[in-house]
Amino acid sequence: MTLELYQRVMVNRDLPTENLRQGDVAWLLDTVPDKSGGEDGCVLEIFNMLGESIRVAIVPASAIEPLRADLVPSVREIEDQA
Image (cartoon, rainbow, N blue to C red; front, side, top):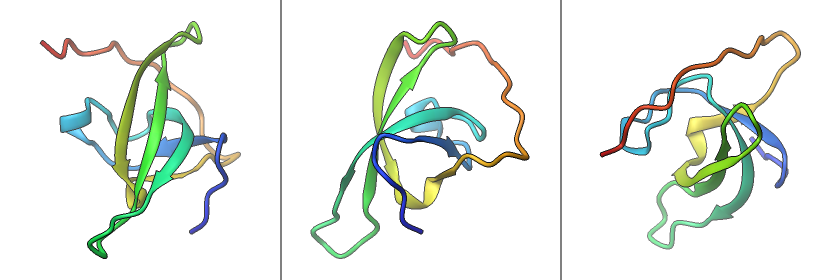
């Protein structure tokens, strides 16, 4: 699957180490090739519901997918990362 940069994408599984959950929406900023031949990574920017940037995360390319018209957004509280 080829995703275009600077589009909104959805996280398709929980990623506890990045404090991301299935269904979270983010902007795809860049891709990072894996020099060892493994799975490429994707650089995501995550925003809160007010549109404020709250963090950047690198996730496996297989962990994101494009948004679809048959999805409805929801909200959740940000978990403390301390």
